Length: 126
Image (cartoon, rainbow, N blue to C red; front, side, top):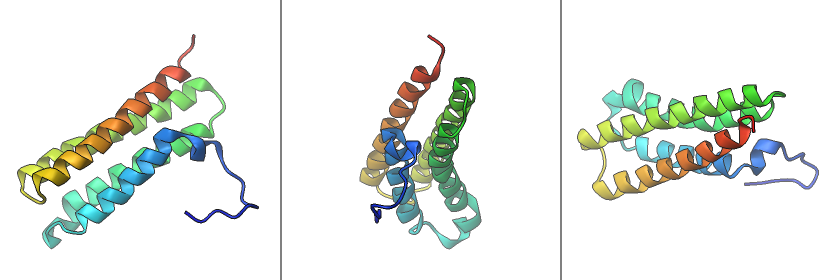
């Protein structure tokens, strides 16, 4: 990623959960390029929106002032990750990719959900 020394780094860019969600979104875009064309407005579109939603909600939540608001956006990101997992499972059932790709992406989703869960716990009142 290009980063000029004059660019401001926002807090969400430092979150490992966001960094991993960004990588996951990239992987989902690459993988869904191989889906059948008749899925363009179906699973392809849904999976891409979910993957982008994870990173976007983490970014948006980081800009909120209250911990309650931050936690709400973190919850939404978690929900999007689970929705993406469901769509991944269905795509595998439909034989849109090989088992190795399924395992690889599922592990990335799991990693992201674990990181999001840790972030969420840190946002709860102590």
